[in-house]
Structure formats: structure tokens, C-alpha cells
Image (cartoon, rainbow, N blue to C red; front, side, top):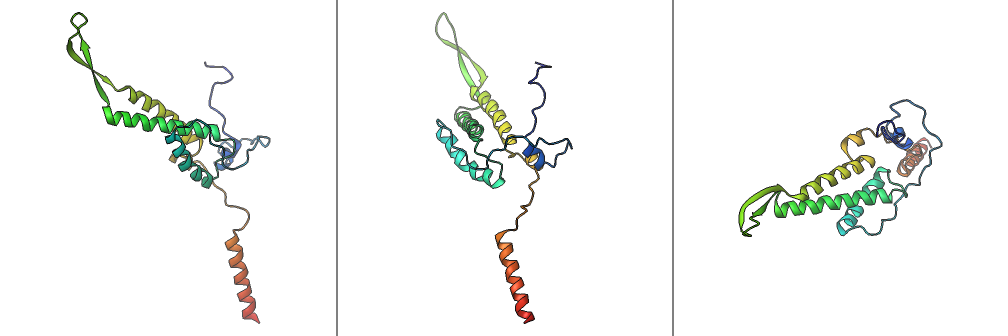
Length: 177
């Protein structure tokens, strides 16, 4: 409903604004609660396909450093949407996009024709794909949402870099002596 307090574009989390370089240049919310990075608990009741997607996607999200312990329900909903897409695709592959429904004469009970209609699984697929896309954007997993993220290099040097620097310094010292 236009004009209500819940209308309009959802605000982005401060972490996402920082990753994008704060394109609006507005003041950032320094008091926004921050969740600890890490693997959330898998929600109970996920289908086998959803559980497999969970196992596949969690390591990728951890590598991107966008997953927190609070993201379990959202990630579970993404995985269930993925499972619905897979189930609908299987139904469409098995029965086709267009189904034929018999037309029966009520008086005689005989089939007098065929009505063609869209497989209801296509509507399920379409709705689940919409939800899936929304979750992909939320987690920064679509090409366009990923292009808006800026991953800052760590301020602490890498352990390998420190080791190599120490070796280089010790080799220089040995050459001077």
C-alpha cells in the first residue's frame, strides 16, 4: 500500500554499503548490530535436495565472507526454493510444459476432445525461481549484485608474506656480513 511505513526500497545493511564503497555517500549507521561471521545451523526439516544445496553453497558463502551465524533461516529458505525449482523442473521434464486434459461429455461420460493447458509445475517453477533470485541477490551471488561489492584487502599481512619477508631480510643480512 503506497505511503505506509513499510513501503519503498528496503535499506541495505551497512556492511553491504561498505562493500559497495558507500555509493550514496550518506552517513553510515555505526550502531547497526553486527553478527559474527561463521556457519549458521542448518534449519530442521529441509528436504534432501535442499540439504545438498546447503552443503554446496555454505563453503562458497564462507569464502566470500558474507555468511554469518544469523543467516540460517534465510539460507534455508534459499535452499528450499532451490529444491522447489529442481522438483518443478523434474515434473516438467517428465510431463512436458503443455498438458492435455480430456474433455468428457457429462451426459455420456465419453471423451469428446482434449484441452491443452500449461503444466502447473511451470507456475511453481516460475515462483520458486523468483524467490531463488531474490535470495541470490541478498547473498551477493548474482553477477550484478557481486559487481557492486568491494572486498577490501586484509590490513594484516599474510603469514606467507611475513615468512618470505623475514627470509629476504635474513638473506640480505647474510650477504652484508
